[in-house]
Length: 401
Image 1 (cartoon, one colour):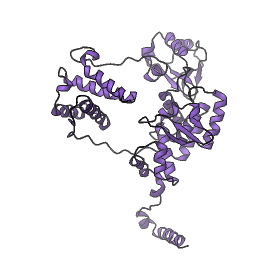
Image 2: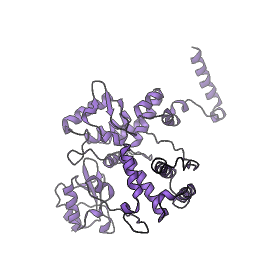
Image 3: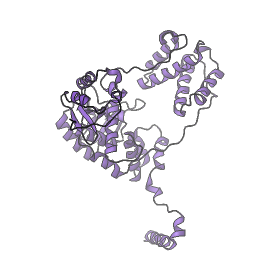
Image 4: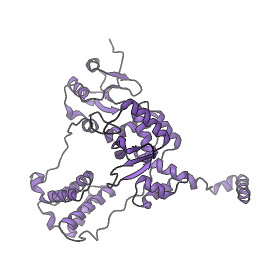
């Protein structure tokens, strides 16, 4: 006798998947099998989500462990997002140097590099990035020591990254930055990389959502926490790392300001708090009563994870029918562009976004329709010359008045 609730059909049990979904739940996709579904239903809180075509469970470590036990597997079968969200350690493949010595023995310079970066208060993300870049360079030249490399050696390594590894311009520039720091600040060989030309980055414009698309994303969210989190991200032009690390005391309801602590580049700033979002925050506050963090994660005392916030946006955008290639960062791009289209001075937008240079903010002038929309294509003079002349005369008369 067939089960009444059927999940998506897959070919093998190895294709099961556990992922994060809105409403603070876990999504589970498994091959259709009566026995598997019967075992899954023994987990408390299990239910079928017809709109997402998956099973869902309470978002808790206990639920994950029950699922793993049901299918006789362990945490290593989890995808990275779930493993990271609940404190599991996901194994990664590490290419050992040819001499197979541990990194601590194979790279004494790396320890000095990391210590110097910490002393100078570089962010953990930058420290990981720089040490990773230098470690890759060291592995390329084993058994030679980094201190003994010439400028021509480094040039050959950068060329290898471009031609053989086909790395992006951003990754290669990061590698150059890390090596420059190593040689200039630690090895004390000034400007050893000075004549190495950086690969030029492609000038990609940000993807911007329309006002209606932003509204549709908000309307697709029934969970008050998720809705307010995305509304706050858009309304204040926040980065995802900034919104998940907000504390209740960072919301200044009297001055209508939000205090962002240690944003990108460890810079503090203030940005605006809208009346609409303040109303939503008050409703959210009554329901969730956050303590340490404005948006708290599953683990007590921990902030909502960045990946979970990204997943909330992805699900909301899909549900809202957004066909553009967007991410949660697109809300920040849209905030800046919409302000520019409203006539807000670009230097005010620069301050709200926390940009060091107005040149960074000027990218939004390329996607704003404020000035572009007022330009008429010359083809209209060919296809509809009378209509164009009438419009021009009307505009001229208006100017005279």
